[in-house]
Image (tube, rainbow, N blue to C red; front, side, top):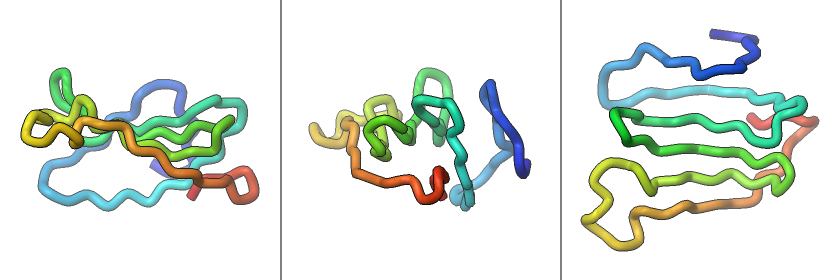
Length: 88
């Protein structure tokens, strides 16, 4: 979908091993924007942009079997500034 304001989850029809998503986010009044990737029952990897902190975070704490390494189940964050009030 293009140029779509979302107020609820938008499932994308996907089957396969690889998916390329180009996304431009204009947060308006939102405090955060999140995408849940590779979601299944009780599992998912969450990518979140926090407007106030201007950080992009990847949360792998519920990314399926995370027991294979103690550092895998983590939330990693990096500073990412908006450009013209847009995250691209």
